[in-house]
Amino acid sequence: MKAVIQRVNQAVVTVGEEQVSSIGRGLCVLLGLSTEDTQRDADYIVRKILNLRLFEDENGRAWSKSVMDRDFEVLCVSQFTLQCILKGNKPDFHSAMPAELAQPFYTSILENMRSIYKPELIKDGKFGAYMQVQIQNDGPVTIELNSPAGPSDARQLSKQEKQQQRKEKTRSKGPSESGREKGARSRQDTHASSGAEGDVSSEREP
Image 1 (tube, rainbow, N blue to C red):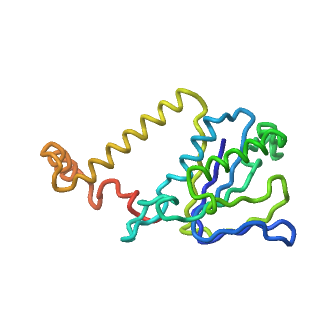
Image 2: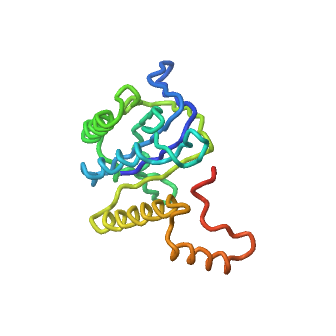
Image 3: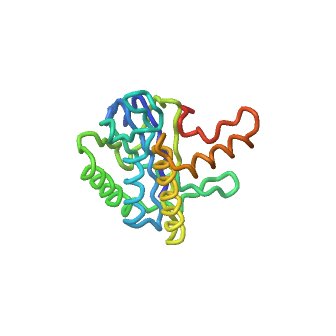
């Protein structure tokens, strides 16, 4: 399963002359289902969409809050072309889940998302329709997300997430951190090249 997640100030979906959905600040998610997707893929994507920290906190600190933390909206749009495989210059969509299977699966994903979050804040396009999607990308911020391809990928992903959580806990210790951690940082600062300030990418807007 593939998702393109865009942080937006607003997004609108129209079919013909009819506006079928719109949101204010939040996330616009293009979602592409593959023939191999299972409920496990769906659960992973839903969890990531709702918990990605793409927003600032009340003090303006970037990358601190999720869409749920800020009570923002989510607009999901089914997008089978994300499963495109190019054959020369011609797109091939055989890896996309057939519409008769994809529609109930996609609907179940939205229902799952609404059961976790506030249902009135989860919006949708119109499955299978020729849609016009207008967004005002905020940043711009765009995240490409793939569900784990198999058990080994899932284990590796879980390991990486746990490592990131440990790093975040270490950073949050502040003045109470251990002497060993202070010493390690001191040695890193000593050998850092001119202008290097460590990894602060997570603290900056793109």
